[in-house]
Image (spheres, rainbow, N blue to C red):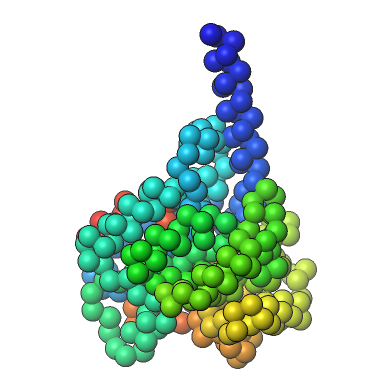
Length: 288
């Protein structure tokens, strides 16, 4: 019995380490590596829009739970919400009658005057397979609008063990009247010397602009329309690229800086709230 138990424990450790390695591409040196809880930041805000950001919506399986216990990788903690928890969160929004609006509706509300009441915008970064496989059906059932930001150069590729969604999955979501497709660069979602590529002096302005133009061309090819919204990898903005994109089709740019969107928010610097187990507790209190 002891031998079997030891073998099982060893298996869990190996599995956890292996699963943890799957997430290194998006986690190494992330500027927001500390679990955000957003405690206290809502006290002065009684109106506005919270833009919620999700990354992984993993199955709440025994293997995933075991991996989370044995691995400290932030992709299993800071950037992961289980499918079960995600459904509970969407049920909460519906039960509390929180108005879930599209990214476009948010911009229109800002343009038309002060925002009264509390609203939510749902966004998804990177778009690995867990988004179309575990989250999209829940959103469709609830009839909640959502925006997903695609790394066009990573589509259907395995990035350090993570399988990104394929074009068939992305195109299916894009056809939904609830969905809006945004950009998350073409191939500049990586780091140089532990710094986001878009903040590195080793990436020229010409390279940034070319990457953006190519990502727009790819999105147009697969969805029939150009993207209007862009979000920065790692939440790390670049002033040159922001201004360039704003002159070439992008209406709004978002980061991972926390904050509530109101009339005074800059459309080219939209704050978003990273959702995980700890941050959701405070987000739910404010929305209640």
